Image (cartoon, rainbow, N blue to C red):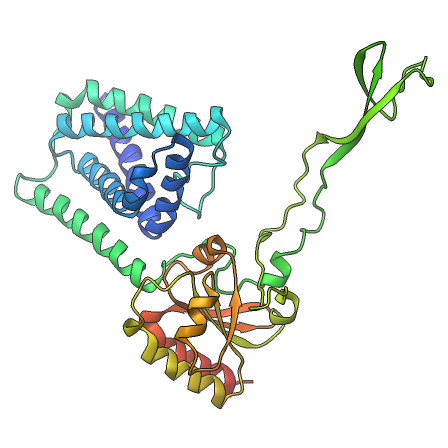
Length: 371
C-alpha cells in the first residue's frame, strides 16, 4: 500500500506543480479566463481583482504540489488539495454542461483541453486526492521540519517571481497564434483539408393554419398553392473544422478603412499597446529611440492600439502611422503593454516588451544588416 500512496503523491503533486507553473508563465491569460467566468455568473465586482486572484491561484497550485511530494503536513495539505480540486471540478463541470465557456484553461494556452477531457481529469484527481486524504497518517515527510518549510517557502517565492517577471517581460513560452515565428497571413487562412460546415436549406410554410418545415430533399407529396410561404433559412447539419487560427485580426486607419491586407506583407516595426494606462514615462524615451532606428533603416513604424484618438495626441511629434485594432486581439498578441514586434512579410521575427527594448533594438539592427 505504501508504494501505491507514493505513486499517487508524485502523480498528483507533479500534476499540480505543472498546472500551476504553466499558468504562472501567463497569469494574464488565466485572469482573462476568470473574467469569462465572472461575466457568465454576473460577478462583475470581481473584475478588478482577477490578476491578483490568478497569481495567488497559481502559487497555491505549486505550493500544494510541492507539499504533497515533500510529504509535509499531509493532513492539512490533503484537505487543501481537496478544496482546490473540488473548486476546479465545479469549474470544469460548468464549462462542460453549461456551454457558456469554451474551455476552462486548466493547463493554460499551451495544452488546450476539451470540456470532457478536463472534467474527466479532475474526477480522476479527485479520487486520487480522496485516497491520499484517507491515508494521510501513513504518509511521512522525507525531509526534516527545518528543510521542508524552507522548500515550500522557496516554491512560493519562485512562483511569485516567475509571474512578476513575465508580467514585465512577456511569457517564456508563447503558445498563442501571435508567437514568434508565426506568419499571420497564413494563420488567417483556413487550413488545407479542413471540412466546412454543412448546411441544409429549410423552408417554412403554413398549411391549414399549421406551420410546417422541410428541406429541399423532403418536399411534401401534396405540395401545391395551398402552402403559404413564410421563411427560408440555413440549418447546420454538421459542424466542420474550417476555422483559421486567427479570425479576428483587423487593422484600420484613423478614417476607418481596413488596411490589414496592405500592412501585413510589409517589413515593419509594430508598437502594440491596447491602452495607455501605463504612464508614458516608462516607455516613451525608448519608443523615440526605436522611432529613430526605424527612420534610419527606412522601416515603417506602426502604432497599433484600441485607442487611436489618444495615441494621436501622444505620438503627435513622432509623426508615425496609427492603426486601430480590437482590444481583445491586442491582449492576445501583446501580453505586456506595450510590446514591440519586428515583422517580415507577415511573419513575426521577434517580439519584446517595452522593458527589453534594448534587446529589440539589437534584433532590428542585426535583421537589417543581414538583409
